[in-house]
Length: 82
Image (cartoon, rainbow, N blue to C red; front, side):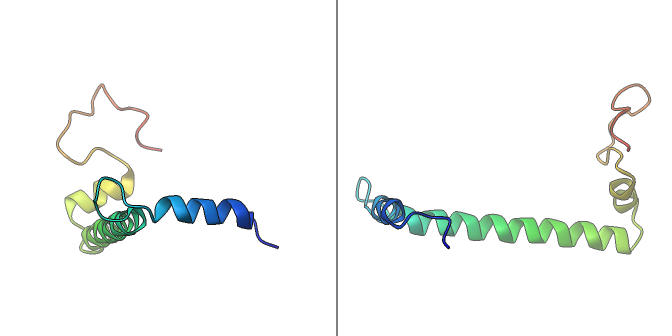
């Protein structure tokens, strides 16, 4: 059993595949944005894993849940580390 009602789904597809102001189709633009965002998320995750693996200072701070970019932590952000 599908979670999507076929009539409403066809309407959504029709709306997504229409041209707006002669630009690219919305569905293509949305998938392009999603692909870029997924790639960016994967790259960030890989970079952080690499920092943790080589035991760099930034990687350790990420592991511990502390501030990474040189902020003062004596009086602020005390709830950051869990």
